[in-house]
View 1 (cartoon, rainbow, N blue to C red):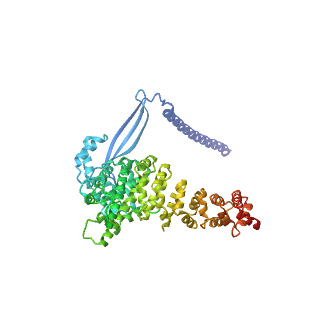
View 2: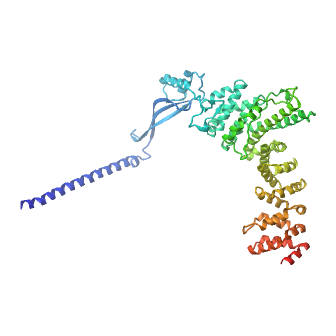
View 3: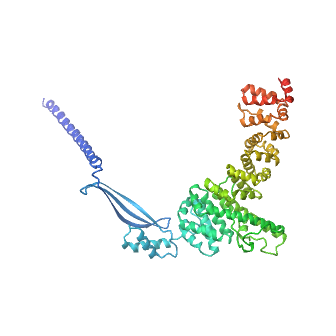
Length: 586
C-alpha cells in the first residue's frame, strides 16, 4: 500500500517540475519580446523627428597605407554619427570603418617628398600635421616602389599594353605628360604610351578626367603636327578613341579636335594635288599657303579601319605594327627632298606618301563621323564644306577610305541641304565606278547612298544618264544587294521617261521570274509595285507575258487572292500587243 501511495506523489512532483520549466521558458521569451519592443520604441517611436535636434559626426583617423596599384595613399578612419535630442541625449548612434584614397597624380622620380607631404596635409584635414613624417615616408615608398619590368602580368591580359618591351601603366601617366614638354623624340614616345592607354576602354574615363593630359595632347597636336608623322598619328588616334564613345564626345568638342581635323584634311587634299603635279612634272594648279619645303613632317594617323567599323585591340595593334607602319613612319613627306632620286624611286616614294595620307584621312574622317552623331556638330561640318572633302575622297583608290567616305555621305544625304550640295558637286557621277569594286561592303554602301539620292527626280535622271540602270540590274542577281537594288529600281520606275529604258535590260524578265519563284504566300510588295509600274510600258508588259509567265501570274493571283498581282495583270492587259496573250492563255 505504501508503494502504491508513493507513485501518485512522484507523478505530481514531476509534473510540477515540468510546469515550472515551461513557465521559465515562457517568461524568458516574454522578457526577450519586451526587450525588443523597448528597443523599437526607443529607436522609432520615442525618436520623434521633432526631438532630433542635432546631428553630430566624429571622424577618428587610423593607419596610413599605400594603394596596391595606384600612386595613392590609403587612410583608414572611423566615422561615428549620432542623432542628439534637446538635452544632448543620444537618440541614435552608428559607427562605420571607412577608407579614403588620396591620389598623387604628380608623383614621379623627381618629386620632392616633403613638399608633396605638406600639400597632402593641407588638402586633407583627416591627417593631423604631427603625422607629416609618416606621410612623407609613405610618399617616399610610393616613389621608390619598383615598376614591373617584364612582360604584362598574366592576370592583366590586354589591359596592360607593352610598347618596345616597356609595360605601359596608367600609374605613370604624369611621367608621360612630362615627356610631352621635351624634345620631339620624347614627345613621340610619350604620345605612343598615352595612345596605348587610350586603346584600353577602361582607361578612357580616367584620362577624360585628367585635364592636364588632354590639354597637353591638344596643344602638341595643334603646334607640332607638321613636325612628325608618328607624333600626329598617335595624338589623333588618341582622340579618336574618345570619339568612339558618345559619353566622351564633350572631351573632343572642348579641345576643338574636329575643327583641327577638318583643317588637316583640307591641307592634305591640296597637298595631294601638289604630289600629283610633282610626279607628273607639270605646273601646279594653285599655290598653297605653306611652302612644301618648309614642312618637315606631316601628321598622318595610323588607323586601319576594319570592315565592321570597330577598332578592336587586335586590329589596332596589327595596324600599328609591321614593316608598312615602319616605312610610313620613317619616310619623308616630300617627293623632291632628294633631287637625285630616279623616276622609279620617285614613284615608290609617291606611293608611300599616298599610303600615309590615306591613313590620316581615314582616321580623321572616322573621328568626324563619330562626332556627327550630334546634329548641331554635323551642321557645323556642313558649313565647312565636309561634302566637298568627302567628294574628293571618293576619287582615291583606297577601298577603306572610299567606304568610309560613302558611309559619311549616306548619313549626310538625309538632310535636304546636304543632298542639294551633293547634286551640285556631282557626287553621283563618282559613284558608278564604285559599283564595279570587288569589295561587297563598298558596293552595298554605295547602293544605299544612291537609294537616298534617288528620292530626287533630277538625280534619278542623272543615274540613268550615267549608265547606272544596267549596273543595278546586274547586281539584282546578288542576294547580298537584292533588297536595296529592288528599292532603287522602284524609285527609278516613278518616271515614265526612265521606264522605257527598262525594256533594254534583263530587269523585266528577271523581276517577273523572281516574283513567280517566290515561295511565300505574299511576295515582296516593293517587287510587285515595281512590276506594276513597269507594266505601264507595252514592251515591258509584253516581256512579262512571254514564256507562259502571264498564265503563271494569273494562277498565283487567283490562288492567293493577291490584289497587287491583279493590278499588275490589269496593267499588262491595257496594251494591244498583250491582249492576244490573254486570249491564248485563258
